[in-house]
Image: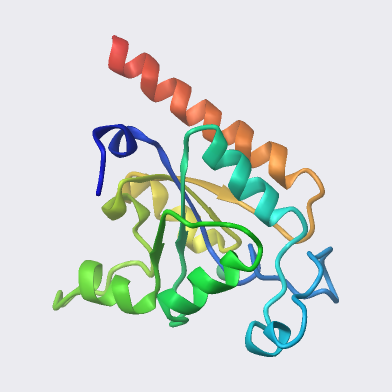
Length: 170
Ligand SMILES: [Mg+2]
């Protein structure tokens, strides 16, 4: 059940591929899961991802996944559960097609976070970030390995939340 409180929470979403899921060849990663779960969930999380998500939630943000991949919601939910992370929402390729693209003739961007009241979306693809202005969402472009990604994203989220609070008061 939704409470009025949770509806006021600012939403932050993360892309999966190359953002939360990265290759240990090119990025620092969280340890892989224990057998047999490492056979089911082969993706490796960027180092610090569970900690960042939990920190944001403790600070009063909702954390969503917005991926253009077709991994199922239950797969994504369960993978993160193994890292003690409970996600607030998931939009995968199927849900986007069903709820955003629908039967529109024009091809919409692969992701429109603002359709889900997401205020900040973290992605590695410049093209997705470039749609933010037109479709009304803020983005954080996460490139390669960045040891300070956690602080930078929290900082960006706080900036946006504070700006919207000021706006509400005005
Ligand atoms: Mg990506």
